[in-house]
Length: 200
Image (cartoon, rainbow, N blue to C red; front, side, top):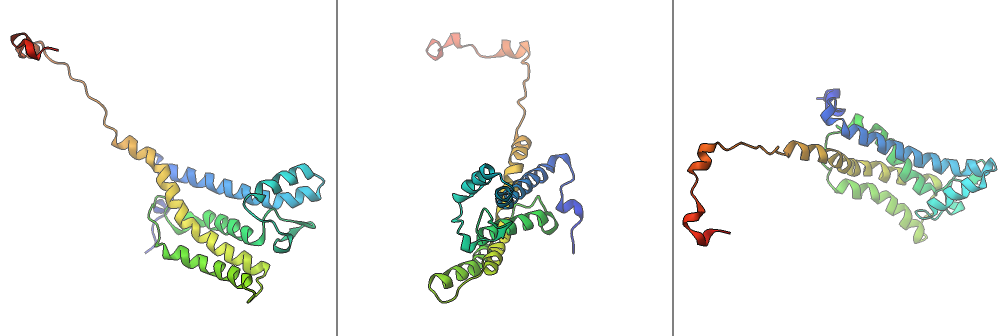
């Protein structure tokens, strides 16, 4: 039985933080994808400084080999085909995430799904490494997209947990109460003057 939209997208002010965190994540991943495509476009439009900055930034996470990369405007993308698959798969599933699972959900799927989604990528890499089969741009892209897409289901619950942590601590906080003691209670209290050894 399908859940109501309120179950998927939080409606109250108290539970809007997961939506805001999700939107920030979507904006971040889309920015990364724009930069990946923007590097060759900047190089093709005579902006080598911008292109070089983007290429250098992505060189820390990708080998950027031309023979393993897609090209736009005669220039290679900022990452290889497999990394492009990882980023685009993650971005696509992240964009559709609220339609698949409630944003308030912090439950993780069984770990076996993450390993199963990594198996095609590992196989694609291993067969080429051992010279059994030569992988292609398409096989790298698709296996990367599969792993990147499935990873969202393990990352988003942690982000949702992070977003609601502050709310939970506010709910658990107990306001201190202060009660004035009546003069009669003070007068009836035992005095320490009768036992000097107990005095501080």
